[in-house]
Image 1 (cartoon, rainbow, N blue to C red):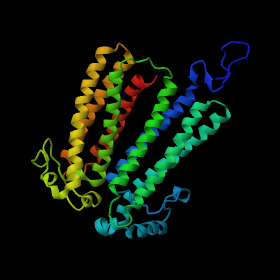
Image 2: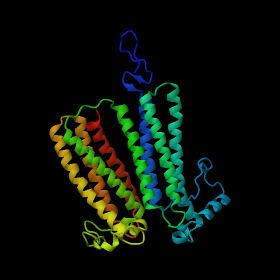
Image 3: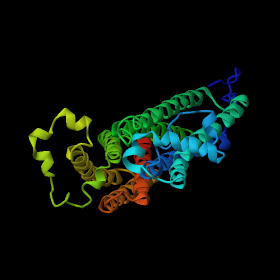
Image 4: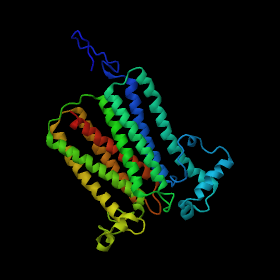
Length: 365
């Protein structure tokens, strides 16, 4: 950081005032975080309503406008009729029904474009005013690159459902969701840095290790949740705490089922839906035990008000997310309930946020 040559400590860098970054810059970043949450939630609605394949082309500029007349609507509808989803699932649907699923995919893409404008226009203004220093500029550059990767993989995901399967590939959906979570986590960490640049030092190395373990487990659980969603695994075992009357589904005990084919063509047998749901439940139990133990140990060694608040937030979000998961599974009879499914996906993002907030207090030096 530049200082005056006369020996005084007056800050000459205009990006920073006496209280750090300017409030408008801080809240601009917060709006970015909120918009990413919105995009993930809209993506969940798009997936659960079966809307993700309704737009069959990726047009970054011309795709900004929806169909404006009946002729345009019929062009879009005819393109959708050529997809496996229409042929195998939605054959005979009306134009009005198509407009409903088209809306959610269009809104999902429009929200992404809106995020670009919300980011780009203030960025140029703040840059011209020299309100962004080099460290923040670097982080914002990485954020843009991550956003581009997420958007590109979104189309790769959609394209996977336009060939043979009537749904997007579960693994590509999971990758798209995981990349979105990485983007979200990176920008959220940036927000932590601009609002709280110097958190208190936390000297307990063992609890720092537990915090890292907790972060890894949470990430694994989100990945498993993505595969659960893509494979629609909740539909096959809509009971709790057992799985259709079994604690371990019989299909998992058959050695002949453990082959590459069942992982690749996961919708041909019950194997992958059983495996991913069984694992998702198991990790949830492990995560619950570890979080409760971790918070109990943490509260015993700290007097920090903010760490205590972070701990209470973490436990609260864990309990809410577990309950949402159970309610989603037991109500997935015939179809996955949209409201519960979306709340459960949003809950995963808020749980990740709580974990990262704890991490920032403990691991940031």
